[in-house]
Image 1 (cartoon, helix red, strand yellow):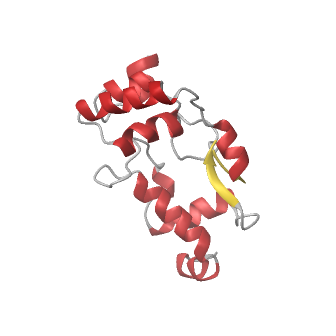
Image 2 (cartoon, helix red, strand yellow):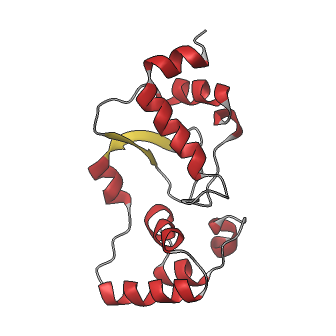
Length: 146
């Protein structure tokens, strides 16, 4: 059985990606994304479980991507992909005036710009929802879809 220390030593880049994924999901972090990491992938042994699920990064240009942007970091919803493919999954906004308007509304609602953009980019929220829904522990799917 491979240990955490051995994996971290030989796959430092993958460990850094795993670490940043876990860090983004902590509520008090600057780039908090209202997403969770499954229990099996948390803690030092979590890296071993995560690595066993995904394996090594296929190429230098590969990025970690969630298949369903509304989903959490968990088996079946995370994969290595190219940056281009990851970006093609993200919702694009062509109307810059509308985007600027909703960003202003977000700031008026005490929603940080990083949270506003993460909601749109990572979760596929509409600009209006990203700017007006207060930060919450509840999942987007349960607030909007459920």
